[in-house]
Amino acid sequence: MSNVSPETTFLVCHGAWSGGWSWKKMRRLMRAAGHRLIVPTYTGLGERAHLANPSIDLDTHIQDVRNVITYEDLSDIVLIGHSYGGMVATGVADRARDRIRQLIYLDAFVPKDGQSLFDLLPESERQRMRGLAKAGDGWRVPPNPTPPDTSAEDQVWLNARRVNMPVKCFETKLKLFGGELKLPRSYVYCTRIAPADPFGQFARRARSEGGWRFFEIEASHAPAVTAPEPLMELLEEVVA
Image (cartoon, rainbow, N blue to C red; front, side, top):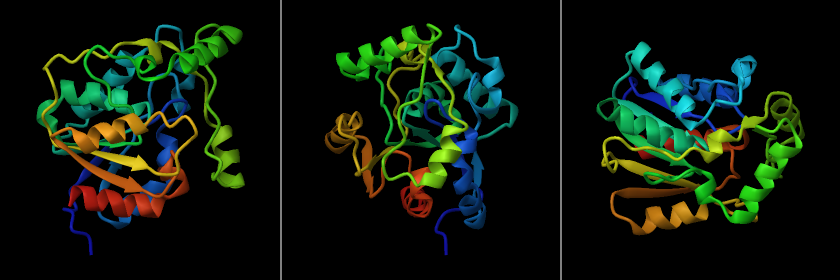
């Protein structure tokens, strides 16, 4: 039996190169648990790839999700940011503070006011990604490889749908208009870490800083793909 109210609305800010489609495995699990799952795709990605252009940045993607809240009249939201989506979710939570019940960072970047995603990566990684953009069309970065434990079937599915990402999304510095976020926050750290482990810094912060709850999941970076059932169980625990 679920301990969570059937009315729980999970709104997901997905990761880079991805789209709402990437949470497909979670839809059935959310429905079975009596929850509502909304995963809007950002402008220029997924089924909205035809809208891609060099001006798209982090603020575009924050506005994408903010508009879903406004036009769907959502409230009492559990907002999830996965990976790059942590940048988006932080901006969305800032602009819709009265609509968000709690914020969950799923192996995600946790920016402070004035920080870009590139600010949260080592210089070598920034240079690598900018170099890839320059070598291509000059304004988009091709996807990072999928985690090594991704099944062959899922790799085919993912690789057919992931698209290059506007580099401005990684360069834009987040603006917080309402000051530091005070709403309930949880960090979920995926323990099958990549060699570079860009998310360990945020796991350490969530463990040591006040105002956080900290959870771990035995999964690689995209548990909605590689470990949907354990992720569903953990999300129920976080929200219960």
